[in-house]
Amino acid sequence: MADAPAWNRHPDPFVELISADAIARRVNELGAQLTADYRDLAASGDVVVLGVLKGSVVFMSDLVRRVGLPVYLDFIGISSYGDATVSSGVVQITQDLTRPIDGRHVIVVEDIVDTGHTVHYLLENLATRRPTSIKLCSLLHKPERAERTIHIDYLGFTIANKFVVGYGLDIAQQYRNLPFIGYVKGS
Ligand code: IMP
Ligand code: MG
Image (cartoon, rainbow, N blue to C red):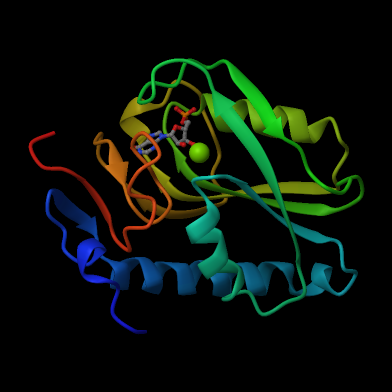
């Protein structure tokens, strides 16, 4: 891959937690796992990879290119009210799917499961739409912060209780385009 532009190649002022290479290796593994698990289902054309905007966009775009099967892509926009770094558990759908998911196999792609409130709400909402199956694929999990028990079917990395940015994750909408995952120095 070509080098990233200079400004987002250097980890300053961040501590690099997961390098771009380590992310790529793990994404390859997750893609291979999904390819194996969905091989028999994908022929029907009923597998939907559902990205949760905006945090999952970078992860999802890499992941789906590692899935060697026909899949349909869709997105759902979700916002949690309240402080930018603390999930309140109050969740709103800001942008809905473009196609119904009843009778389909849905793979929800998230950036991070933190308290678990967002994913809990989302999975309950999606279940009412009668998909044949729903699995959760999350790049990151912060188990120390869990307030809900969430089963993650496909997990990239478990991380410590740090507020992380990069590879799709933001702080106040910034730094989503860093190619690595890091946290602010001293935090
Ligand atoms: P929840 O606490 O599991 O509901 O997390 C909800 C959302 O908060 C996630 O989908 C992220 O968008 C955001 N979030 C949680 N932890 C972090 C973090 O460390 N960095 C960036 N965003 C985060
Ligand atoms: Mg999110």
